Image (tube, rainbow over all chains, first blue to last red; front, side, top):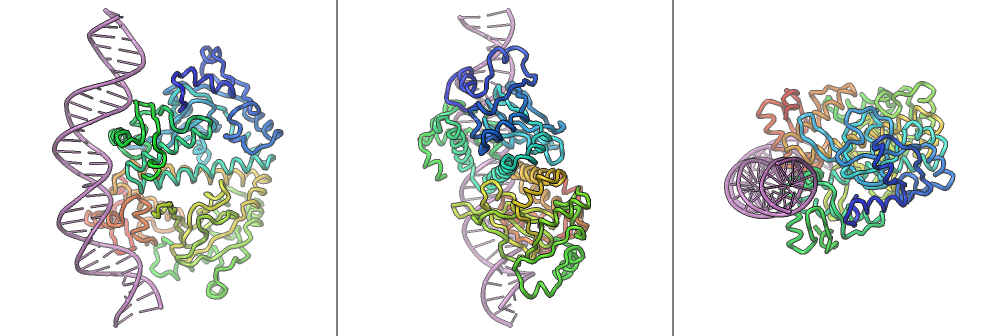
Length: 261
Length: 261
DNA sequence: CGCTTTATTGAGTCGTTTCAATCAGAGTGG
DNA sequence: CCACTCTGATTGAAACGACTCAATAAAGCG
């Protein structure tokens, strides 16, 4: 989670408003799928797949989203090569996706925040093509894809929503390609910070003050640079008064200046 | 077109086997949409959206794909900002997609070969987000998206095909991100050549001997390097005996060595 | 055929990487 | 409770790869 609060437990409680993860369930049977996702009362309803659906359609979507699942920090929601069955809506926490090149190189291809959808890569070959690793203890709604497809044949608005979601992922990646191909390290880091900022804002968090849950290595890998360059760039931004950095804690001081990079 | 033949007209005729573009139509009313796409007799049937569909489903798809359209070299199939209505299946020719950054920079985000689908980026916002420019005289099937969506609600196999197509585009772009972020200029050019080679082979062309219809600038932009670096890298490959270059004409001499880059 | 665009090649510069050392923080166990 | 270790972050200096600028050559086009 990229929230502004200091302690992880506070973060969890914040999400618990929308996603009822009571501490007991969390501490007991751990990572087994659990029933009872409730779209209608979920605070992320207007951000995730359920957005733009009316009451009855949300209910029908909910009938497909039967389970949710915990993923502990560092654990995989799925791994490259796993057979594809479901897509996942992130409820709380944060997840990175990692591509493993045959040569051994690893490459972070995305960071996901609550309300965002993971696993779309698996549809084409029916096998997942990357690892999805939790950056902190996280919870996801499990959406069996064949059920979603069946429902999409009946509910037009849901079908459209799913298509838009997939298209949005395509657009997001095109933008990232552009960033990697044409921008300097400084520009990439600035774009990255602003991107996170905007996504947090949409979720009701402070757009200027947040903690990056991923390591410098993850950031570097995602932005196509070494961890040293990522670190140096953040330091330089701090020297220039654009941001304040304290390890993973970030404060954006001059959004416009960042935008001009 | 990336075909192996020398003259453009030979290329056109080759495609004319599958897509009945007679020269008369081509020379007369030019770029207006034309009726009469015929999926059932199209040679690209097993490569494009119609793959994995049985006879009756292809016929139903065909009822939606009512028109096809010529796009002359250098002209736009659509432009960034155009309202989104249709996706396009490339029948013959080749097309690049270009992203225009507000700052004025342009960036090639993709090259498309016959049988591939363009325009998926427009679904999410109902506005196209890039320009699609023909690299040579090209022909596309026009697929009104709302009709396709309606049909997908009725034909499960088509729905699945469309989902797989979109997912494949996501996977393709993830791979490109990895390439841009983690590989050297040499590795990128090698990967690019091998990628083109594989796609041509699937379409029945020689995988080792083809013409690149795009400029060095396009290649460089697509691969996140300057046109000079792209040119130099091709020259170096030639010196090392991996390929033969003669302007846009390419011959791959040592596929394995390219793969090891 | 001349004009314009595209491609090639060279030399110097600059940004990023590499290698290496140091520092900070979290978790562990004596 | 404090040393200890391990991982992650920061910073410096040298090396290298890609870019920029520039000049020339080749190819496409009217």
